Length: 158
Image 1 (cartoon, helix red, strand yellow):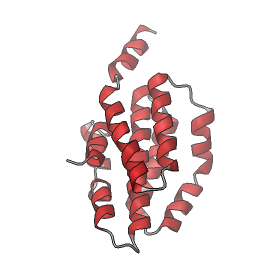
Image 2 (spheres, rainbow, N blue to C red):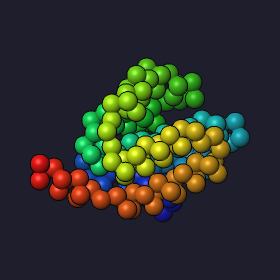
Image 3 (tube, rainbow, N blue to C red):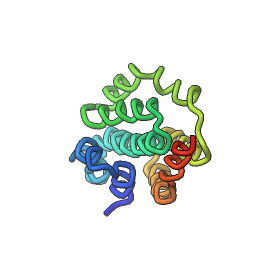
């Protein structure tokens, strides 16, 4: 299993999430990039990047039940599933630009959440496969370490 697929499976642990988000398009994004022709590689890179970014936002949403992160992850998943070109990706995400701006301004997060937001920002900044692979590998490590139970315990105590 690739690091990309591992990240997806760590992010989408619940059976309902798996059936909704672990689609052939999502699961195949990295392999499609690797097999793409030189002409198609820029688009396939963007689709792969959407998968990594969406996984990070879904982890953030699950970590603290952040509805804003959940909505942003849904936008990225929709673009991953339906976009047919880099311009199409830009248009779909551009329509929701305000949502992504709010993600950074209206969100209080703990240290784990900050780490996920940092990885999300680095995913968006990654402009080469080696950079995205490095962020993806770090994201897998972070996802393995997330403590979803601590957040639930804090809510129970409140």
